[in-house]
Length: 438
Ligand SMILES: Cc1ncc(COP(=O)(O)O)c(C=O)c1O
Image (cartoon, rainbow, N blue to C red):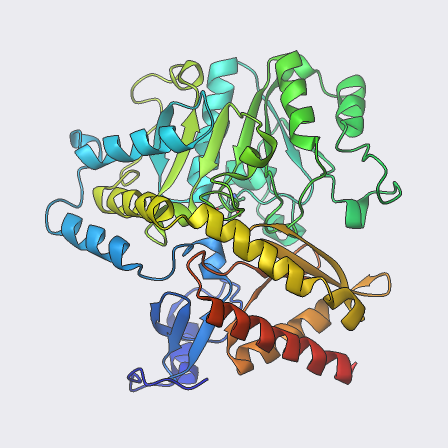
């Protein structure tokens, strides 16, 4: 798609050349686009292209790029106060904490703010150890919790994140996630033994003393690991183990939270109440803010100064988060996310019949994953081909999963029906083009 947006004097390619000379190339980019401006669902590039954003900057700009109410709130705050750190109190952090307490599950009533998802996870790990006096942590294969050392010690979605940078936090134990399409051997429709706790039982019988475990950390829907919705009952199973052994349940809602799944948080679908929740990404619609929300009994184990941050809970980021929560409520975006999710699923229902490579379609609300296979082999190159072709046509999608063979559909909750239809049509055309080639 071409656009009327003013072009910069340099092309995408020229900017990428400058990037290579000055910016660390450790960032793994999902596309070669160079974005100079964005609005709602539309990305505008230095080359003057207009591309639909079905990735939301990795599930961040959920109310759309530069939602006018977020822009206004940020402008107003910048004109008043933009930094205090812990030199003083400020009002926006109080209001944001109160709002988060109101929207998170019952019992979560104290908030620690950071700037990124990983910082929220780090804080959760530390407060879990501090409040239980225990050392060990249980995490899941396929999970992604961030790249700082604590968070990375839990992350198990790709070994390259661990390459050459160990050793990692001791006391972390991984166990399979119920990814029934790929990792379970039970028949479709049969109860999933992993979701029922089979491997946790083995772990607690054979090599981990449950009394030494501070927390189970779980993504209620696996994000980077492949947009995997666990079978019903899985989160309740984890809750029951935590209750039995005095462990804390930490829900990492960094990717699945803030309305993305059609409810405010993914755990709300199962009415499971975690002891700690990590929120980030969509909370600030792109302004850096994250939150670790915990029960006060847990949070009060920390005494002043035992943990902290210079920028976390910054007034401008808080103003953005407050505006995001207003927008979600006033524009009824939970309903919209659920409704558009159903609409997409209805449209995708024919894909498995129409496209030989489409093997599994799953998701909740606007957190949808489409897994591509070539027989029993993950169709990684096929997905790369589809995504590249789709970008040429005018829609940006992201891949995920251990083999990068899952296309995730994470458009903004504010996407117009026309943009949604256009983006899906382009994606269908790209899948058809790749099927013809293969
Ligand atoms: C579930 C989950 N937790 C934590 C993180 C880490 O967040 P950040 O990249 O902001 O540190 C991510 C990032 O993708 C995530 O998806």
